Image (cartoon, rainbow, N blue to C red):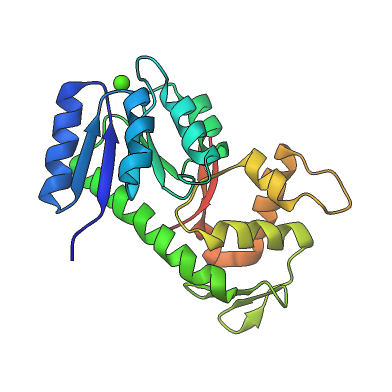
Length: 229
Ligand code: CA
């Protein structure tokens, strides 16, 4: 079975070559581009299965490229992993809120790179299956959104409205980092205003109720939260 087609967007030739080498060794086919403009042009043509997008690019920068891809209904489904440099935390948050699927800080080892790509591709496939079902099973947790019920082994947990919403959001996509702002937007609609600070408080409460499973809710410093993959 042919492996997925991955577009690498990187203006530094050495890094581009290194990534290409490692991906092809794993059996992926690659499309290498050196600018945001060419990335946008070729994305619609080749429809890659995943885009590895350097944020610091000459011309159109990676964030704008990401926004354009995620706002175009023809390309929005293509997973994007942002490749980021030190000090780009604010850009990471912006990128995730624009729909980027993950990020990879430079410098990274080939091993981490491949693991991240596999994990994003697996998530995308798993998500398609789960969108049909509804009930989520993670480790010893069973989350039933229809009944708004969470079972830990066989014990039902008593969660507040917001705790349930946060857990359901994070657990639907394990490994996926959500910013506080994304979480706020997701659980809005309850009777009281939700702030980013309130999310931290909810997470503390949620972890406590989850007991030993609380460790699955990971804090990503400076960015947000995720359910452990
Ligand atoms: Ca660059």
